[in-house]
Image 1 (tube, rainbow, N blue to C red):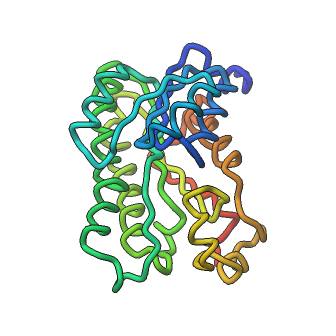
Image 2 (cartoon, rainbow, N blue to C red; image 1 turned 90 degrees about the vertical axis):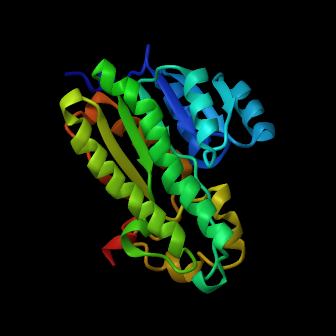
Image 3 (cartoon, rainbow, N blue to C red; image 1 turned 45 degrees about the vertical axis):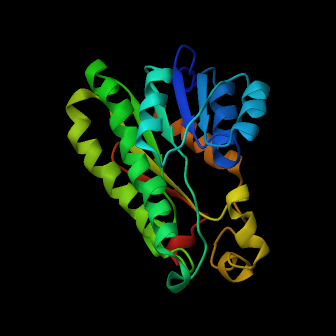
Length: 246
């Protein structure tokens, strides 16, 4: 079997959420480079549209915290071969300072929204007997994280959701995986880096001794969603420079 052929996404349709920046934009570029037709979805219209135009991708504005918006996205997008469930939010605060509204937003976007996206797009995949769903979890799902209690809990739930869906859908041939990035140079981490909430103290625990790049996570996503990883399902692959080893 040819590795180059496995990584060729020509004639495959990929939906990437949270695609306007960070991991999502990098993954869109990587899937486009691999030959895929990519649909980008994000809540930020002003950022999404110019990025989609530059990358040559279809674009849809949606709000992952709104079930009705997810259903509209599924109708507008139609069938996809790959769903990359990347959209998410981060509230970096001590647990005692995190409001109920902030907790609800984290759960609604980072867990419930992921589950609803899986249901909306997984139904067609199961019916067709093929497809891949890649959920974006987090290193904090496995080691916790200071100032990230509810976020980490939601991302841990995503890892368990991935395992359970993989078992449910295995007879159909649909693969479900998750990718858990660690400390990476993205817009989401910019504020916490500036405030010193993810600074040198945390980086000192990373065996590779550096921040990750969005493009590294994007390349991993392309590989995991391809036939090159065809014998992998239900797993959450941790890409954190070795942080959780400590």
